[in-house]
Length: 121
Image 1: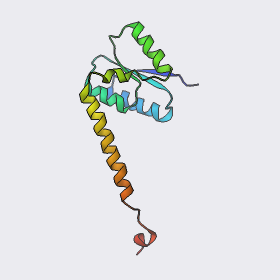
Image 2 (image 1 turned 90 degrees about the vertical axis):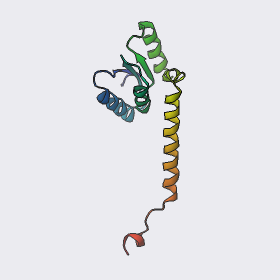
Image 3 (image 1 turned 180 degrees about the horizontal axis):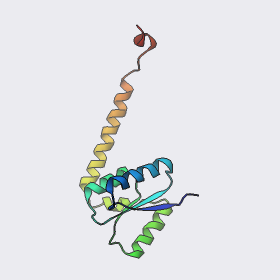
């Protein structure tokens, strides 16, 4: 039986940690991910969001705050939303990503696939 929550130290190897988070979510989407870092910053927060983490915390977090975050994540909540409240640049990046995805999806419907006749003239 898989765990409800996995805690990942993003500092050790950021790219590998983010890739591991993406793989976990791809194979076990119900698992909550809590990402810990010594350097909370907008660039990393955006990458953590894209990796579908549920929480992003400084390693300076108190044991009580960490325990509370783990409880929230294990009950299906996403405390990472609080990380976005005072970061409008990240909110704009997320909106831009959704807009680009929407445009690509809409454009994909406008292009019709090749017919058998088109493929074999």
